[in-house]
Length: 440
Image: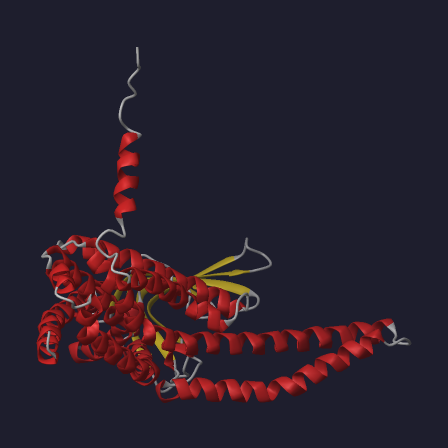
């Protein structure tokens, strides 16, 4: 076949792949944000948060979801397209005409390559900023509408020194009904405050909120002598408490997931500068502990300082591990579309199934393995059990080896019978459930 004919064939396959890919991307993204949509509807309808603020929050959450659905869609799409081509005997027809199946992969390969290159930028620059904006918006909702954080019939223990229980809340009006507040911040006494009604007002500038209570009572008892109980009834009462002693919105700190690739490298470099003097200090304390002539009091004091320094050193190493895990995670996920393409291309030809159900089942198996490996690797990498590199790249390496084997089968021309052993295993498994026949 001429070069022009091959170009037309690749264009034909790419034309089949692109619409299916974008449909799968939209469907998978929608499925993953479905639970978020219900939460958003609750924030807007029930709790009265402005729709613009909530939609802005959703817009900043979607990028972190798309970093998963972009590679997931590659698996589903390539399995569907190449499975349909194989089921319609188009792959065999091309093979018989002297066109190897790998030539049918040219256009989709460049698509997967483009997606990986796009994710290298998207994961390291766009997603961290979107996560940080979402974090600031959540903080904004918290300080502007503290009542939105209240869960009815559940104790609130986020405010230090207080335990608060509210039976019913009108989130739009900010009114509260049947309120119970345990005030345990005093050293010598415990106060229990009940009220039939009330409202909650926040003061973002001061980092405080005030409960305006009506028709209630204050019960106070001493911690040392619980038999003494004092009761005061009131028509109206105010309680002001500090609900946020941390940074204001403009000073919201970035976690690992809110750092860009360059910011992670900068943080690691700054921590590494601290490690050398900290290691020298730890070694010095250890040496001094082994010296003779120390009194018992001096030895105990030095041992405490040594243990504290050693814990600090371990903590700094753990911080580096967490940063490296997040750093490698961004790049491992970016390479996923390319690896998934090389896995799903031969799998689609081998399975030879046009049904979408097969494609989704195989895709779920592949991605569950991938995602479980990432989650497990992240936990082990954070604790330093395995190296941060291996914790995030393990799944990619395993799937790369699977891709090499499957593509070797296709390259060898055995794609049409390479999975015959599955049918044999199926027949043997079904044979176990057949009744035994006795030979007379």
